[in-house]
Length: 431
Image (cartoon, rainbow, N blue to C red; front, side, top):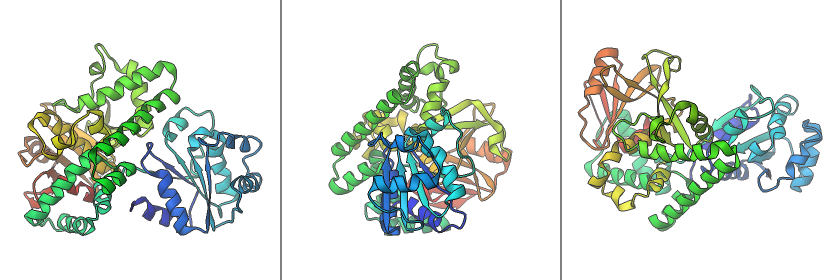
């Protein structure tokens, strides 16, 4: 399956300033598959080491972490010669070996001609709680997310439609009605299947939503296991409670996260570590309120006001046990959840494209779902789940801050009028 990360890896391989690469991301997003596929097609051989399936590997890094010591040893373990420039060295689940992470500093300084990619599912957690110094400035870092809407379309064989969507986005020209309807239908399928590569592969191969749901439940179970394995005993229950609450809070009219909804009397002091763990693991992401619309937005974030979205739409739907047909036909019973679901979807697409998202709220309660910096401009992004695009909050924001333009995502076809760029939900990947 086509993954955009391969384009990034190709540029990394050819870069004069290449450093060892740290590829992070939540479990099951396709890190190992993408790296091995890249290695198979771009190198003469791949030396693959997995610290989870081979715990004894850790012992190799105890004596020394200098490249001169490690390379002959790793060649012996792999049963193949590691050749500079021609072999891709892959360390998988590297969060389980702190010394291996530290060794990147010495590979960068003393053996830059060797190509190394390290992958980890809980790197954020490991680095945050580590006893060692992280090799800052000695590694390239990249986060891999689930497949976006465009990758999903390509997996379904809809390459031509994806191209037309990009062209319509660029020119603000409506798609023909039949194509618009077809793309909206694919968008709903994406909400059900999500972007986990195994789920996408199963859906493409079978079209069976029940089989996909079984795989999603398995992935959710692995997340719960991680909470138990890589968390201290006191935090496990709180982390699970917080995770369960996130999906419930997305059904509220106001999707701002509230600790008191985790449990009666819940407070930040009790649950902030649990929220931090979920964010560091890549399972969820946090969007803070911007107190002022000024550059850089990061300087004006309100650390006490935020929303939390899950990393994959399919897992969100599975967690809430919503039937596939209810999403395909957008039944009325889902009305309370449609807004939060559409917001979550858009945030995922924006995160995949590298945006840091914020939201805005006026003193009188007007709210903009997202504010992003795009081409040097601060742009408001309004999200509607249907084609009802009346947006009083957007008017208030535009009157107040006079942005170059605004983006309105909804079920409506492409258009541009009154400095508002209307974009169908399925085209969020174009932003």
